[in-house]
Length: 484
Ligand code: SF4
Image (cartoon, rainbow, N blue to C red):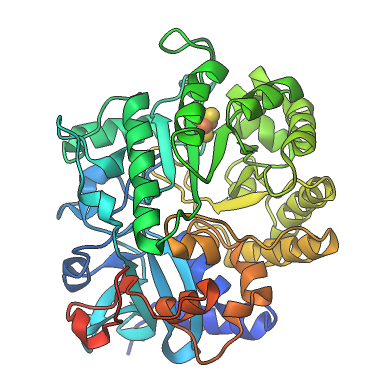
């Protein structure tokens, strides 16, 4: 008689991690898994996305499958992120960036009338989708949707290509150029020009401020990030600094109470001073990987144009001009274990990046770790099979980051944005901010508050609860009164 091998359950893996790392918030472990292995939506879960904040494909695709393999128009239905909470492990709410993979074991489904994260039919926790802001329904006279100019009141990709081109220049994890191409081919996106109009960006920025005013009854602060590809020479007659400064001015001085972040290659102290005067409050020189050898391999264009030592020097210098919490370079968490040249063991990979975190945080630089999504059209994935990065790598690295964050007394990551979840729940694309927030923020320490609505009401101090997310097809069954 031959035995039938059962596939290994990811739930047993999750529970093993919970036991092995009792000091690590369970929410962090679940989120790492969801970002690493992706997830999929059943038809019932997709049908419940109506009215939610749709995924923007704003920079990279952040999917583990190409858009042309999505057969049911999933790319125009799935939410930008979703919340996970409660369930058998009594999770507190964290937000998870939607990362599509039809072969993932993690399935979002409707169970007993409400959205849930499942594996093999077993419920792991509840799920809800963020509701779209009002400005998402607006469009310009030429049909361009406001939300394709600024996503979720925050994200502004002004240049959708990169002049680092081809395998000798492009960062190897990056699919910006491929993502632009697949969006154009899908024809479902109204905004296909690679460069955004400055007047459109200014107008949508004003609409975001108007919505913040209407919602709060006072002019609440808003926050924008300006990003796009590198400009190695000129674009529309402007150098990289001049090009991006047009958008800085439009957003910083286009309305009240703005915090504006710019994301580009590392800039000299003089450039940072100039950009600061043009309206830049924060700068992210995304270094992507700490190890010198891997920096040179993963970021050939950045290495050739600026170089490893100069990149670090510039990030550190920026803090003197912009202040702490205003220099937050991104790292593609996990790419240090990419095949074939990445570290072979978790220990080596964690040790290398931990050393970098310590050096950066000791100088007031606050690195972010956007979890690597292994997008299929990137150089790294096309050239070599890339299995999921071990969850234990992320658990250990994020634990170290939290300890170093405490050691140097850096800021609790709370921001002012149009979307309240993004003020108090960290970021959807990695767990680096969840870790200190779940451990330290008072709004996370109340066992009677677990849903997004309950935690955010406590965090923001609202007298009345607000409707913030969609919990299932029959929304009224989980209705939370008040407008959003
Ligand atoms: S600089 Fe690198 S990560 Fe940024 S858009 Fe260009 S290739 Fe992509």
